Image 1 (cartoon, rainbow, N blue to C red):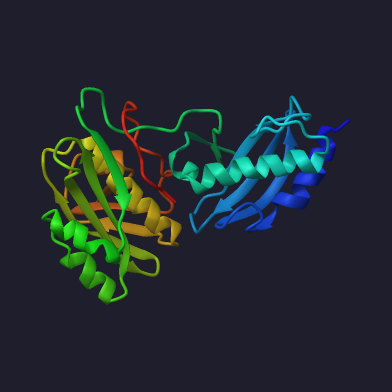
Image 2: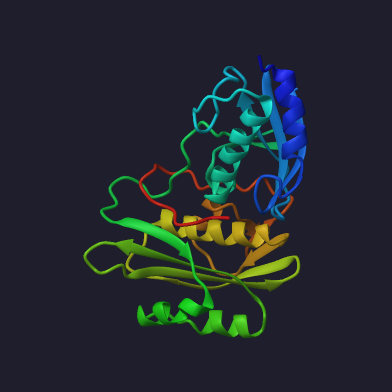
Length: 265
């Protein structure tokens, strides 16, 4: 019969180190704490130590698939599949979190945080763009020059757009271009239109800052003003706004859930 100690040993064998779960994962620690498995890890180049707590109530059944397992190694393999699924689909960005003992603990059992408030008639989407897709943004009437120019200089860090799925054939309602190099980045260009809800702006800004932080950026500055910037995790900084790696942990904007998110690192 598989024991918690068996699982602990198997997890330390399988989950520690770089890439053992998925690209961007670096497993740092596995412990038993109050009858649960506490897995500590780094994610990409973010400045945080993350953790998840896993119940050990039923070691005969996979925590992800629910399929029968007969060994500690099989149980840990199933757990690794769960972690890969959560992280590869944006869990580090969107799962609820609490900071405890220096770890950012992600709640795998809770619904992911949503953004757009009730009463919004359209369903908004936010996704990243590549330079190969610049034609689409330009076709929708937004200025692609800031993104294209930054890419030409090797300084384009992220490019996010928001669009609305309704009878207007997915019109773009916002774009945000992040530029920079090394540890510094800027929210360099923004376009908003069609009375896009503040919640959608907050989501776009949050994803842009998150994407930059995943690349190792430690400060993101912004010299335009909008009520959604604080909601997205930025703070006043002189005449503008900024996020710093030593600020409170980046957390998804908390407004009622009524939207989709198309990708987050």
